[in-house]
Image 1 (tube, rainbow, N blue to C red):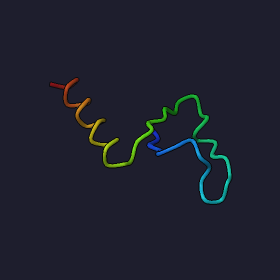
Image 2: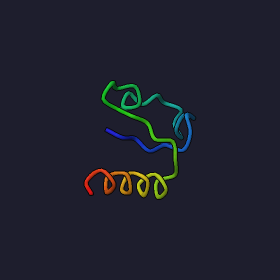
Image 3: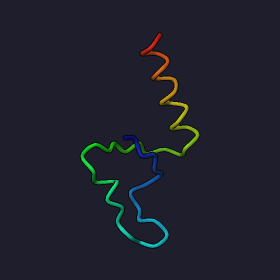
Length: 48
């Protein structure tokens, strides 16, 4: 699972999100549009 997040800061409610520490989760620090574009380009490069 990939979580796109702009920083390590806590959210509005200042509550830890267990999703962020799940061993199956990877963090991509980026804004959503840039991060999704990078994922799409990398996927296209792998698939051909």
